[in-house]
Length: 154
Image (cartoon, rainbow, N blue to C red; front, side, top):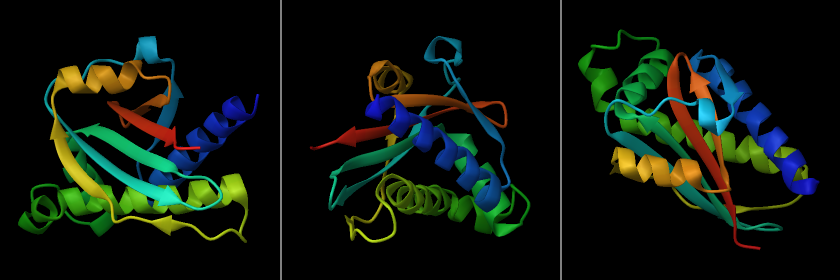
């Protein structure tokens, strides 16, 4: 029951942060309803330690990074600055989601040590592996498939 409640909180935090920070709108969807991405993807992930420890990650089609950056920066998607900061924007979104999620799960008092978000490019088969894992949540974000996962070390 607690795991399902944690998933609901994670879904809510993800949707809220993307709406407020990147002006993008998403919905959680059943995993069997999410389309496979048409190209390689970008994964941003970070670890945290405190009252609970684990890894939080987001996986998006690589072109979605530019959309996030354009929205966060308030610039045109084709601007060179946007293209140069696409991965940084995804890392920042992940960082904000992580902070908000840990506060939503544990309250304001606990202290967590967070690592700097890391980025890696992944293939569609790697996407499918993350999709099939029990700790992933599927979203449609402005018509694009997106995954988030929360892996516990506890």
